[in-house]
Length: 123
Image (cartoon, rainbow, N blue to C red; front, side, top):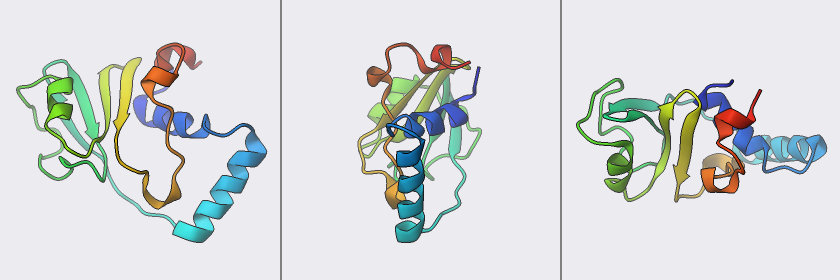
């Protein structure tokens, strides 16, 4: 099993048809956008852990590690621009995003596009 941050990157990789397409995308992205370092914001909700990513309207509104009195979906509903990973358990997590990816990143496959829960589909 893989944790949610690694699974998110695997969902980005899954957008590419083969390794050559992935390498081409990575080279073009590096030339056009460079790279950016950031730390996600993690908050605990009543039913799991939310990782709020840059670009989300809620990014920076809470302290990392803060416990909130709402469900994960209630938290997402508070955000106009959503860019978050919702973790119900180590193998049950969902990516939500309604904004363009930053700096030329490949847009990850969404939970609805995956035939099985992501955590269950990975070794």
